[in-house]
Image (tube, helix red, strand yellow):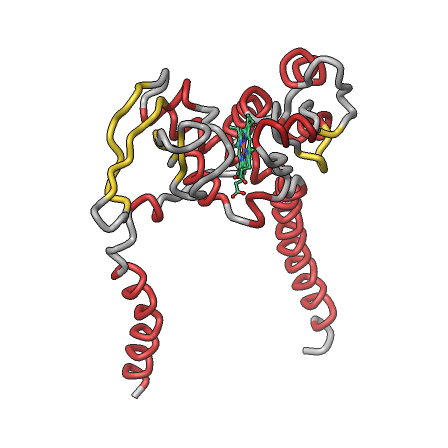
Length: 243
Ligand code: HEC
């Protein structure tokens, strides 16, 4: 009887998974995962550099100060100032884009969104896919289009690094595959790593406290373990006389 119950449970748990993997029709890019790790400090540092160099011209992170990033990611103030804080900004400032909203509106017809919460609202996988699925599209105003956000107003700002790939669509308009187009400076693997680091940094920026929370968690568990030992010793002590 118990065996039956176990089998039934296993089957019930496996059923949705079987369904999910049965969705062969969805093109493979929709299954890409960012695979970033908040515990990887070097990756976060590279991601911060990527963001400041390639994204901050248009996007802000208005809830995070440069100094906080430096402290959390182990980047010294002078290194922050020399490399990551733009000229004219102070290290105590929030990360706001230098681009005035009016200029952004005139250039893109939309103000590039603040990216503080983008990984929380749309997920890390989404941002990873967004940055990897730009493709050449002569009909688009920017010359490129995007699978994750069709018709996006964002130009493919990383085209120097990734190059510009071609997308092949089937008769019915379904996306089939990418093909090489204009080559970029990075190999596919290097570009993946670039995007992963950038997404990692954006996930950190969405909730800077996450980093310290993990470390605090370890101390809490250690404390609880220690307390268990003390409680057990106390119990031994109290019950000694009872027996
Ligand atoms: C030249 C200006 C510019 C730069 C540089 C830029 N973006 Fe954008 N970005 C935009 C605009 C404009 C939009 C709004 C797109 C839309 O809504 O169609 C946008 C939107 C986005 C979105 C939101 C997509 C969504 O689903 O709403 C993400 C994520 C994003 N950008 C990430 C990045 C990252 C990461 C970088 C740096 C590698 C970057 N952007 C660099 C202009 C820029």
